[in-house]
Length: 208
Ligand SMILES: C[S@@+](CC[C@H](N)C(=O)[O-])C[C@H]1O[C@@H](n2cnc3c(N)ncnc32)[C@H](O)[C@@H]1O
Image (cartoon, rainbow, N blue to C red):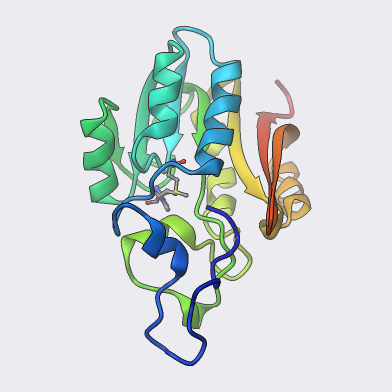
């Protein structure tokens, strides 16, 4: 996903769909893009054989499958049933679940999340699964903040969460939100694109 959401829309035509959705191979499941690859590369650099990894919002299962190739025991989670089916077909054990809420405390060494993050005005929202993959609500942080609320709970001691963050969603606001919940942030990867810079931020519990 890159932040050119409106490019290609006809401003006079209320039925114009976001160009990003049109570019996807399917209308229902987000396919791996530059953000997916940046996150997967950062995860693969860190993962040790045998680590237990939860890929939140697994989509096609791409990040989880890369981590599995690196030796991790992976589980994917997604709200979208089509994504769950696609990830399962790619060999990723998957649970249809909202963020981390379905998992027990301390279950994972690593959590990864490439969230829906494009800032989207309420009147521009589409009620479909691709919208759930792309839209981060008005400030882009609608999925990020509840993720940060619960991610430390599912991490084992010494574990870490890897979150894809765009400059479109105010990384400083993300960092402050996390700090207020006892999470320290370290930027571990970054890549510039025409409309934004993508970052991978590693969060750990401040006490770890
Ligand atoms: C940007 S896509 C990333 C897909 C895949 N991880 C990748 O990197 O290619 C975001 C994914 O998060 C899922 N998602 C959005 N909100 C969610 C939630 N509350 N709980 C679980 N998954 C969610 C969407 O269905 C979508 O598959």
